[in-house]
Every structure is written in structure tokens, then in C-alpha cells.
Length: 311
Image 1 (cartoon, rainbow, N blue to C red):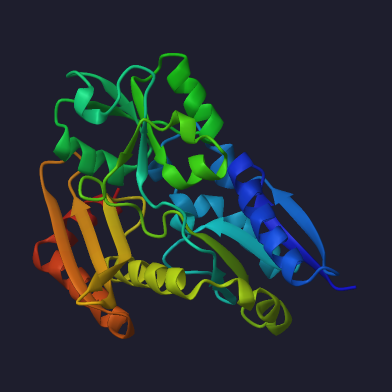
Image 2 (image 1 turned 135 degrees about the vertical axis):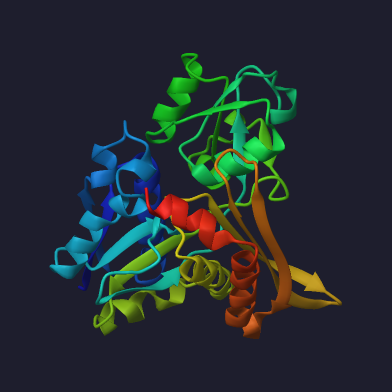
């Protein structure tokens, strides 16, 4: 009997993702023995500090990637929005799962939508990307840092610390908590994060056996769209230190499937949002990413990003 070890964080959502991959593999290989190797990441140990102040989303990956590199685990399962622009030497992400709803979700116990909130209402989010775009759309609202797992964030809302909070639709749907969603926020108002809604599987580049096992799980459409988003982010050298959003989606134009690629770099107070919106063929996704990143750089994105990346 073959055996494979999946490394995962211990949060409820991370375990859902790891078990989703485990079940997908077991459907393909009924005789495959699969163990979950659970770790506590540095990001989980610093949940009371704003993420951009403690090193960014990469803090959720370090321990998992170390487990891959030292042979403790064969696979690591991540939310692709947490995956850094550059992976450690020797590691790759050869497979991603079908994308769940990539939009952001508005949750409140008092108001039906962001439009209904009175001036001075406090909205909780740990995302500079969300803060920048939502502050531009709703300048009368106040935004306050919010960290913790999904249940912790919801409990902070329920005990009155915030008038509303913003979470990812994907996580709420995966945990069966759709009833908490009051409004699905349109990408026209708030573009999602790079890779939002997509589960990625990381392994050692030289582990051909494991790569072969997981290759049937890969969703080609999601893989292309996420790779396009990550290409833009890589050119911009973006990350959680700056308000950056990139969103690629299939777009039907004259009965032909193409990619619509939108991206944003903005000031944290919402005073200046730089945007690009282009459509191109799937086979030219790299060029499309370069064009969108170039649009933003031509508008002065490097000045905004440099200011944040120096923090």
C-alpha cells in the first residue's frame, strides 16, 4: 500500500481544504493511505498583530514548506491567496483545485449592505486591499484591523466590536456558513486577492511520484487564471504589504472564451486607485499579465508600492 503525508495548518478552514484534497486523492486511489500532518504556523501564533506588520501571508506557509523540504510531509495544502510570489527553491505548486466563489462577503448583524451603513460605522478587515477599495467606494465608513480564524472574526462581530466585517465568500461557503453572508461584494467595487477562492497543492519539484499522483486533481482553467494573476503580482512585486488586487476570469467575447484580467494598486485611504482592465486569449495569458502590470506601472504604481514595501 502506498502512503502519502499531507501537511496542513490546524484551523477549521485549513483542515477542510486538506481533507478536500485527501478525499479527492482517495477517490482516485482507494488503496492509498493518507495521513494529515498538522502544524501551527507563525501566522497562527501572531493573530493579534496586523498581518502586514509581522511579515505578511508567507507566515502561514513557512512551517509547512519546511516540512516538505525536510521530508516530514509529501504535500502541503494552501489557500492560493496566502502563497508568496516566489516559492522556496526546490518547491512547486503543480496542481490547483477548481475555484470557489472569489468574491468578498459583507457580514453584519445590523445592516443589509455596505450602502446601508451610516457614517462612522466600523468595518473589520485585515486586508489592505479591501480597505483601499472599500474606502474609495464608501468614504463615510471607518475600517479597523481584524485578524483571527473565521470563527474568531465572527465572534468579534457578534460581541459588538464591529458593525460589519469582510471575509472571503469561499471560506464561508466551504464551512457551510452561507447564512452569515448579507452581501456578495461585486468585483466592480472590490477586486479579489490574487488566487482568492483557489486551493493549491505544493510539493518537492524532484518528487516525481507525488507529482504524478496529484496531477489528475489539477483544474486547468483555474491553473491558468491563477498563474495569470500571480504573474501580474510578480511583476509588480506586490504582496500583503500593499493594497494590490488582481483578478482573472473567463470572458466570452464573440462566442470565444478569453481571459478578462483586472488589477488595482491603491492608496490605503482610497484617495487614489490605479486600475487596468484588459481582455486577451488564453494562449497569450503571460503577455496579457505583462500588459496589465505595465498599465499600472505607467500610472505610477511603483511609487505607491515602493512606499508600502519600505514599511
